[in-house]
Amino acid sequence: MPRPISATLSLSALSQNLQVIRGIAPRSKIWSVVKADAYGHGIRRIWKSLAATDGFALLDFNEAISLRESGWQGPILLLEGFFSPQDLTLIDQYRLTTTVHSDWQIEALKNATFSQPVNIYLKINSGMNRFGFPPTRIESVWQTLKALPQVGDITLMSHFAHADGPEGVDGQMQQILAAGENIVGPRSLANSAATLWYPHTHADWVRPGIVLYGASPSGKWRDIADSGLRPVMTLRSEIIACQTLQAGDRVGYSGRYRAAQAQRIGIVACGYADGYPRHAPTGTPVWIDGVRTVTLGTIAMDVMMIDLTPCPQADIGSVVELWGGNLPVDDVATAAGTLGYELLTALAPRVPVTVTE
Image (cartoon, helix red, strand yellow):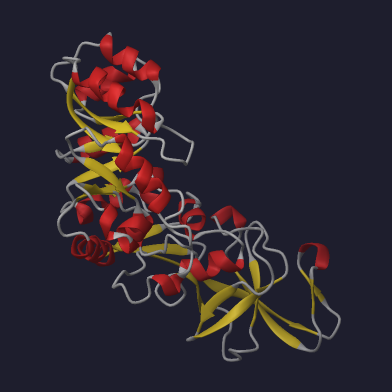
């Protein structure tokens, strides 16, 4: 019998989430962001459930090629562009749209030969200070690119650093508007948070990522609880052993949890080698038999310990939800001091994945 841990992906939830985004930004086209192997869900497993999108956005050339070879014929955007001049051969061969954020990339385009002009996303550094040209240079860079026979359509692009928090988008929007004041052409600005909460950023293309998979860009499930978005991934395992502690007994490596009184605990087949965060403290929620209970002590490589006090009927073989439809991944991530992004993308290859409609 295989180890009982498994992840289940709901393709209907994924399709529904895309439609929710379509309703939120009805006048914009959608780049469905599938970087990091579709946020841990697996591009090959899920892309057909997002086939109603207008395009896919990602980072990795191998993932882009995989999409093409799987049958997707629509636009594919390389969010970080190309990494060496040699990559331009693949961009031409697989008809990819590339971000341009650095002068060396422009020089590489000047020296390239393509079978057809390549569409460009020109990145504005509006304050995040990762990629892009400063706003004061955007018009001249745009003119340079526009003059190149190697370049097709040019879209202005930026990324919001604070759309998921109280600072919002206004400061960056002012820089973006100033940078493109004299440029006629499409824009793509809104990430997941801006798509949800700042309609004036939607422009021609929105780029939803984490929301497609039913998690919140703010890290707080309550922020999307009424949106119609549904979790796509459910991670489950089972209790594989039980122990009865006495007052003073300690649990797990380093004995970080000590029982204050007699207490029954369950040992669950899920650990950090499955992608569960080792740093998750005592008190991180899990779901079993219709109630929430919590982890106890240090997460081990292959198992975790949970408190069975709220669910005395639970026993060996009882199903435990680590995150999913009953327990939002955002709640688990908050308890562990991280974000749902990290948990979803960290799902380990050894965890079996099944797909349901």
